[in-house]
Amino acid sequence: MAFKKNPLSRTTYLTLLAVGFFTNAALAQPVLLQIRPHIGDTLRMHLSQTVEITGTTPGSRPDPVRSMTTSIEVFTRAIAQRWTSNGTLMQTITDSVAMNPATPASLADLQRRAMQAKRVTLRVSTDGAMEVVDDDEANAELRHIFGEMPAVLTRNSVSVGEKWTREMQIPLSSEPGAVGAVRATFQLDSLGRNGDLAYISIKGTLFRINTPGAPPAGPGYGTTGQLTGTIQIDRRLGWITDSKSTIIVRSTIVPPSRMGEAARSPMQLRTKITQWIRAMRAR
Image 1 (cartoon, rainbow, N blue to C red):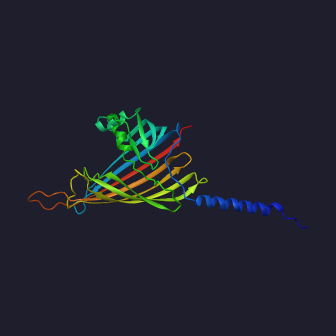
Image 2: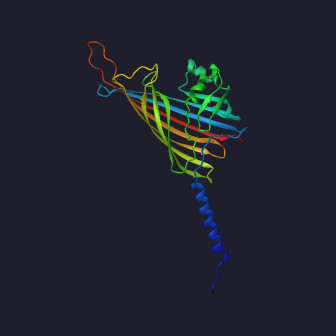
């Protein structure tokens, strides 16, 4: 017995082919990546940051290894209040802060605890830069955290595979008062969920920069570093919903020798900063 061909099969196939073609064509078009939350939305954010510092003195007997790890977790809510020409004004409320190791008696820990239940106004530009606009010393710790979030997006439309560069500054833990610059390359790797999600990768290098008032680097100092990370943007939400970054800084420090003493062995410092920020719309 011969079966009749389904007359809809060819039509269905061509329809699906056309849908796939136009979907791929749409995703291939340049897109504008912006941080622009909807007014009235409440976003819950969870910041986790870990700093690991390891110091070794090669050649000494025994070869001492010293390490220290600190971590902080901050849970906040951000409410989009209004748009301005310079970005979105958002009121943030810190729900809880946890630090490890905890030092309740220290001033820094008291400042962090003072952040809880405080309301702070942030200005978030469309390229991702954040700044605290409240002039309140009680919010110094939040200013320290959010004030170091530079612009990460380009203001131009980009296609999948396209790259752009940004430069940001970070303090160098091995040299008090010194500042390093990270020159990072961002790439739009792909789009998902019909273009609503944008996946971005980051690679960068670190180098020391001379800033006014900072002590010059001595002959025994050397600093190099690398940055890697990923960013996920929900374009419908207008916000970065997942951001992971790792910065590894390697420094060589030659301690000064006192008169009459033999030259001291250089110390190798390795600092690893890991940061993960997650965000979602409050239900």
